[in-house]
Image (cartoon, rainbow, N blue to C red; front, side, top):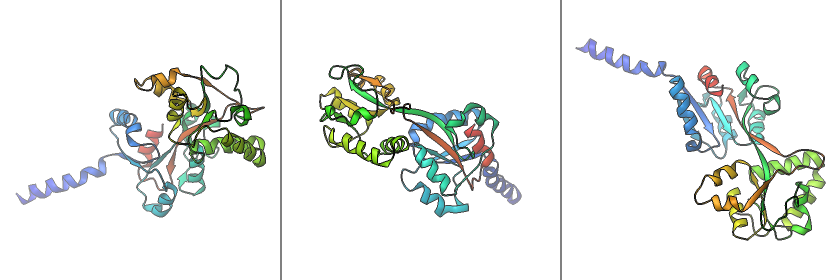
Length: 269
């Protein structure tokens, strides 16, 4: 009886050693990426554990060091990817699958991070109050003719910070400062809410133009409540003068101390 009980206990405690898993620190809320995780588990049998880390991710990884349980980091912005790499808490990943499926411009030159999705920072313009072609560049948004006509979320939001960074890259710090001041002077109201809230404000007649990411249009069109907001605007892909439309990526990086490296690579691929 004792031998049978011991064998049962040993067998039970040994099971976790054979169970593959991947631990993910995510800037995306778990419920948004859970369908992908569920599909991966169904295909591979590998369990995924997602921890939502909205703030302080770099500091957390640095503090945890080699003891960190995280295998992968999922982020919503190239700046965050860069911060994580600069902190020295990631490792290079060599994968023919990733190289074949992700264009070079959407992955780190040193294979430290890989872009998973891309989106443009676009203009939503009122169909009724903004003529087609009236806004074609990001520079246009600082024109005084739009005074009291523009809505946007907070300037400290990652998406707007990334856009301003791109403006600096194209035109320099002083020009970017002047542009930001001009844009601020054209605001119809104090920045509040997310990108879809700005489109709602256009629909409500509170402003005529807003900045937003491309995917929000799809979300609004497929929402019974928000479809009317989407129908009230047209989307404009503005460009920088002499350049293209601002793009950003959500991406993934493998942590330096990843305890489940092989399983993590399978999820990345």
